[in-house]
Image 1 (cartoon, one colour):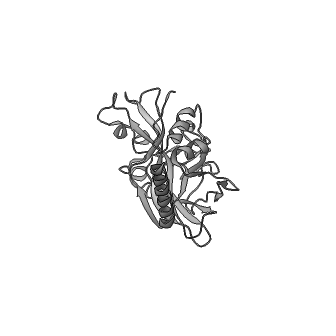
Image 2 (image 1 turned 45 degrees about the vertical axis):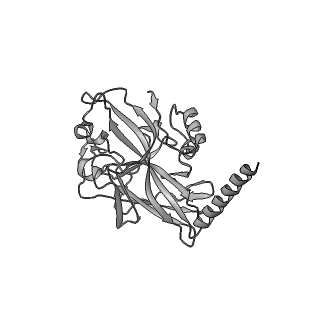
Image 3 (image 1 turned 90 degrees about the vertical axis):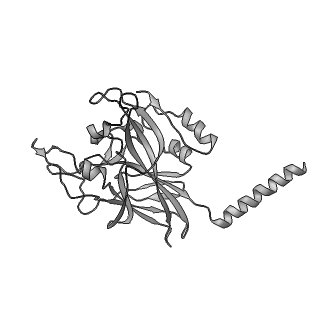
Length: 277
């Protein structure tokens, strides 16, 4: 499948790395960091967590009402961890995918019916190794799909097949399980990688891509930690049945105003020095 790449970054280095590292399979954390300028940490069900650039993410912890499809048979589940579907667009080829509105077969091959009214169902992770009291920009890396403007100029693909719709990156996030904000279908994300489907669905092709979705600035506590809850989206996932497909989180330190002032003065000094020459 031919990959169509759209990389948004302010540095030419990030664009160069993006162009030369087109993934034949799954792309790497280094690829994503070159594009976004932040540290990427996976959402995945590990036992030891993951560390990059001195920042550590704890093992994914499922909520009390959330079950893992890879560990539970014969019942409806809410999340499948280490999911490898659409692995070409994921860092390391793995993601966390919700199954709240999807059916399947249990261990006895009996159809499992969707469970309604169980929206959000968040898991949580803890980011450690941060600077106490400092602000960090967080972006969730999620998978989304959009219709092809040639075969589907009206954008009807989402209405035909909600599970492969334009807004599959709908998800919720927050600092606690009881207070979540939905990153809805109208919110914008930075497109990282994109590829066009090799076959049509109901006569239409679609594009699948990974998006870095900004969820705002967060402040590390006195221990240098941020606890992040992530759940299903309230718009598409619960109401329309679209899937929530989550890859990880990008963490970027936000410079303090004093630091920015120093950088500004440094740039002014360089400019004056050049003028004197």
